[in-house]
Image: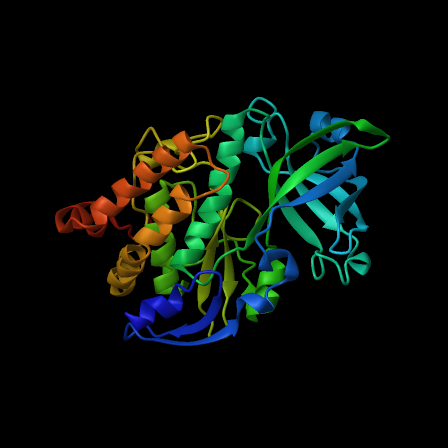
Length: 362
């Protein structure tokens, strides 16, 4: 019991050495909540103002272009704090105008201007932008950010996020603006520095190189939220591993997988999402498929225990969310609760998880 509670401490990171011979974790806390970067140490939803040529950004959607602008917010003393920034569009599916009215953004901050601000130690950040103005799209974004929080309940190794009320102000025309929810995602380089890990630069790795427990936690969590759009061992052509997950190498040489980008899941159930790959064998992200590896079986029971131990916490995070509309709460809770019913049924666990694990080349 103590083992998995240590590993899955929510909102705290744990550095662990996981032996392959025994399911024993030797852990020591290295980054408590009050040691996190200030941006991710709080949960207050603040107002953020971004000023840039957003009409141009939204129409061009050119990954090769950078657009000058500013990021600002009201500080604790009531003064407006402004930081010079560059903006770039990012992503693939959500970059297409047919799928999203507004593109996802990179926000590059002038690092010599961030000291003493909310964005101290931040340089380049992903901003998840609300795809469209409709209330349903607000729910999609809230649930996507909530997925990051849910995974932090499973594992201390996760990306931190922070929600904001973001005003996108057209440069030179302050009257042309919109305000929507958005959230920042911790950058892998900053996360690696804090954990004293290294970024994995290879395009592909072997499953045996992965930390077994973390890989299983990602697989079980992905089963919970209905995610099949990820890989822990293969990246896109010409890019570092992996797909919708980042690998960081611990000092012991093990690779830890950090999942991200949860909009194409049954939990978020975004109307614009691409849906599962035809190779997966299902038509909807609401159909669960286990994608864990058979060779990690020695820690699978432990990963399942971690998931079970968080059932009430996961439920509360959904049902008590202050921003999610009631209908979205009910649907999300039902989807997750169906997963937990599987975990209480040994026959279903055997069929859907143990008998469905993947070999190296699958």
